[in-house]
Length: 286
Ligand code: PAF
Image 1 (spheres, rainbow, N blue to C red):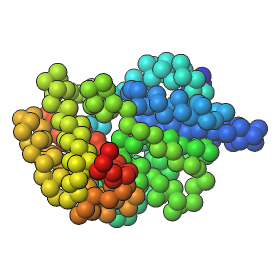
Image 2 (spheres, protein in one colour):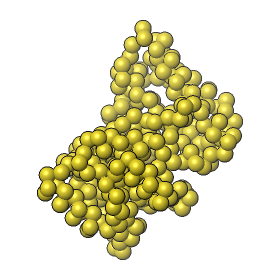
Image 3 (cartoon, rainbow, N blue to C red):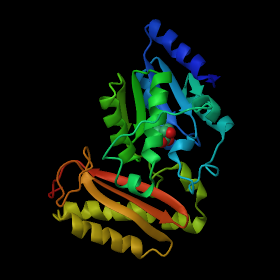
Image 4 (tube, rainbow, N blue to C red):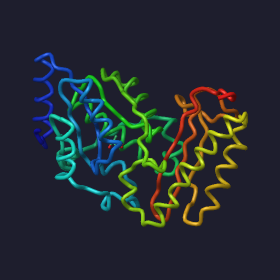
């Protein structure tokens, strides 16, 4: 497995691979790998001749009071894990490589970035859209893989990719969970044992929402209120948002319908966690 840090060298590598008729799969990450990342790499491995995983903790998607400095970084361990899966190249540029002196260009996806995580983290999706655009230009892959856990990010990247005519298939894979249901996240590393137990409240509230819908409750506000009650009963948890929206447009829904996204962000102590489910088919008899 190669580790490339220079954007120019990376671009030349992918250009050569494509000229040789190879298909290329890209897994963009910020490192600190867990099973969620590995599931994306495995799928990319199965579907492409060449797999590139980028590891870059992108400063432009963190707010000034967020965890950019504390974000876990472990290139050595990440490389070992990626190599076992058969990743061909890790692209690990420095901040200077990606944002050299005088850097002035940003990508702004409008409207769908203004709510949910975008409302609590102003500028976050501008940073994500910018770095993903750069990655798509440096690594013009055939397919790029993202996890459903970051539901709004997936919608934003799909929108951006379509709007900017990127010729890259965006593949979204399901959230990978711990045995007890907690969605895997690099930020779970921040949790104390007690917080780790409290963090289960995200999955519990989503599971309860699913049960309510199964039993015929389709009123979004009632479901939202029941989710709030569960989370508010957990002393270490503080709700940032609970949104019930169309999974493609992110428009608020008063009534649950097919393809509804129920997404939430909750602070567990100081750690902000997100999770979501998609109700793809309402079938109360199931
Ligand atoms: O999901 C992530 O890890 C990041 O937001 C991404 C897509 C790699 C952009 O920095």
